[in-house]
Amino acid sequence: LQRIDHRRSIEISELRTALQGQVTALQGQVTALQSHVTTLQGQHGLAGDPTQPKLPEEAGGSA
Image (cartoon, rainbow, N blue to C red; front, top):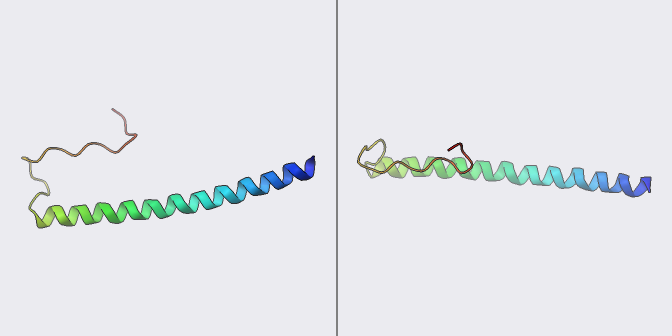
């Protein structure tokens, strides 16, 4: 039984590490997309334009 628990513990640790790597990769993609959006807004004169509707807050943010 201890051997099974040890194997599960190792598997969980490996899965957690893999998941953290995926999260880190996604964070990098989000950062790149935010930068791209800012660049596009600047090209179209939308950056800081008070006539444009405000973008919604980040998902999961406080209401």
